[in-house]
Figure 1: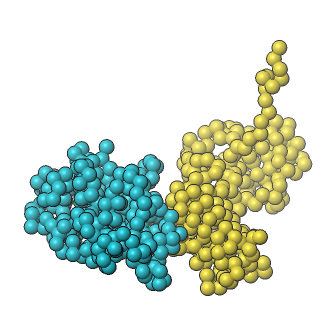
Figure 2 (figure 1 turned 45 degrees about the horizontal axis):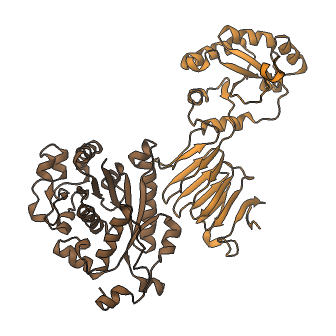
Figure 3 (figure 1 turned 180 degrees about the horizontal axis):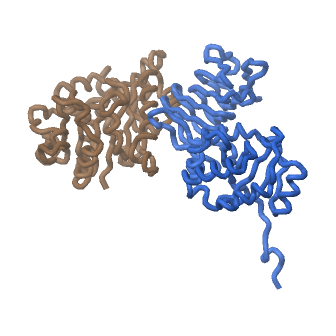
Length: 270
Length: 271
């Protein structure tokens, strides 16, 4: 059975697309056939982060409208042959998405793929609602600051009431917390919410803490998902996230500002 | 030999029964109005047992014959099973017809009607109420629906007696969600900032309350709010409210009860 994962946050700019690209790559690297879908119709970004923007011919909307087949629109990743990208349309808007159309595409993907990662747009409007509607699991991406935490809380409320699982009274969507852009230094100095503060409000299963890292921006600009960067703390943290999601028990790291193993190894900021 | 318990058993239970409140002693008018109502919801009224409430008639000192009313009801297919608020003479008439009588404890028929109108759980337009269960079983029974369609008609109203329900919420109430309970509300999980919980009765939150809590929203000044950890944005009872700014530090993050006393909202720590 395919699992549909939505990467969501409510707030923009917290790292949804970075996370979608990273975990999709991580799952595919583990040998699971994975598709990642950009739901941000009109603001197509995932293809850039995945480095496949020059190979986009057909998109998600074309498939929904029956103008292209799924196989025509899916782009095979150049780093991993188990990973496929379904890009968003840049020329349309969210109204081009329909509940029925999205359902049809997901159903077709589910026949072939083990994991389907839905990269949600920001906000709580149609695009975001459709991205989460069919989800089995939700990765709630949150930055350690109050507005992001509140927006995530709102998103959790929507997951619990507007998803298909909620509407059908099935087992609820499994919700996981991903705390991104975490900076232990700033937590220590009180400038940033700590993990405990965030968990006090959200009380979710923590899948991982992604430390603030320059390598994320570098990776985005290069079009290579940061998870492939074994020298980056963020990349390693995403590898942990994928392993934990697949059931491995790994201790959380990058929570404390210790001059730990990695800092010694790489000397200073990464 | 059978012992007595296998022959029969006595058990106590509660049934929902419509009450027919009569406001006129005009039998012809009663019969005609009932026929109209029955034609609107035939399934609901078919063989329906009902209790006849004659308090209004006696209040207005209107003369009537219990036997005549009972016969009329039976003729149109209803089963009168009780009389409420009758005089001694009327009660004995009813008992002769094998109809039990109720002395007519001071139930407020108006309040009951109000609860019926509110029987459905009201939530915001997005319908984002988290999993809420009614402790008394099914939330939407067809009878309640049928009645609400006819509840506002003037001559007499047929309102099923429904106990005030307690709503139980076990999922977290997230930011942006609203919950409305027509009776009491019990929340086992946290209520996030930006969430709103409302009840016509009391509110119990067995966790952290960070959002807004409004008890007694229909004006019940004796409603109370109880919570294990008060961090609310706003608390209100029957319209009197306090925002977090005006909640003293000594009761913040404490288990408290909140009630009204002489129009003042009192927040007391539960020791």
